[in-house]
Image (cartoon, rainbow, N blue to C red; front, side):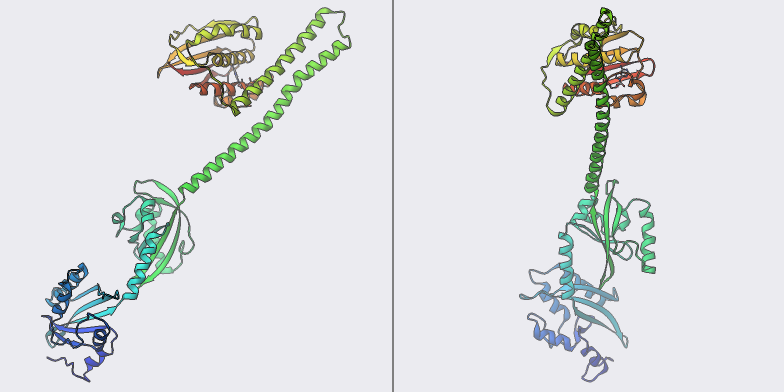
Length: 498
Ligand code: ADP
């Protein structure tokens, strides 16, 4: 044997000065040499092999522990690895081996290297104490796992090394599905395409785009959906190399809350503007009839037209009309504020909708005595619905009074009640008036909305249709209009067949 481990020899001096525990063994496991660190270890650590282990068999020392009932997988792996270097199946083998005593947890990193000395094969086994490092990793892992932020640990090439429970929840992946994969699977395009380049570039230039800064980016879930997330990235230097840790916070809920707030603010803004429009139009609506009442009453008081009964009657008639307008305005306002603040009182019955037509006629005639009311020639529905007949009448009177108001010269309207798909019954009032602009057919059912162009010379507060909509919806129905500008409109309500 060429290598000499006698005192004062070169190898012994070098190996004894090493802080790692070193054993040199022959390929059958016979220990040729153990260094000073091995001897120190034997003295300090209960259960360690004898300090004077030379000529003992390394595997027997190991087997003793492998034969214990609590032998771990790591022991078996170490044994296999060392054997394979001894039998020349591999040149080098490394593993981290737990070597716990009753009182202390310890880990050793084993580096097993095949060496040749004058054609004689030997195997050198270095045991380095890595307990502090393993414990630090354990602490890191338990922190990593328990943290409520999604954490993804990647290596320099972008491969995912750890993925905590919160990240599983955020991205919808199980840890085992992503470990070893490139982190770009968690990003949508174009970030996915560019990520490798970004990582490479950063490593070359050391100029971070996101590292240590954090920003809002898009994430990609396992189901293919994307979401906004806040991503902060930190760099960690570990003995195995450089790693990057990404801390992910899902912003979906926050963004949803932000959107809802934005919508609420827009609605409040809309309501505020509607209130301004309302106040302006209300003062106009109230002042016009009020001025008429005051003007005509004062003229009568001063005796204007006292000798002309026809003139006098016309003045009185004008006062009555203006008074009615005010009264209608007030009842609309009251009705609307009732539907807004209180739940509407309903007395539903099973009725055939056209049964309410007869009751409506006197009211409509009082609005316009010479109005011609036709019944539609379409096939009339025989079906019944379960609604409050008084409220249906209120809705249809509103449609009819609008039909008269917005009809100018045509002096006729049409009533109808027809079956509709989906087992529904539609009741409608058709007119041949000015019609509704196509893009405003939904808007006119909102409170205080009036079509300026067409309705400015007709008194009204823009509340009637909003009241109708509320009433209809409370009775489980829907409301709408089909209309053509200049040709007329058909306002309708629909209810399910009872
Ligand atoms: P008001 O008639 O008091 O303005 P409504 O809520 O009943 O309030 O109607 C809202 C708006 O819808 C009206 O100002 C008018 O512009 C439009 N509208 C309602 N009915 C008709 C109709 N039959 N023909 C044309 N436009 C109509």
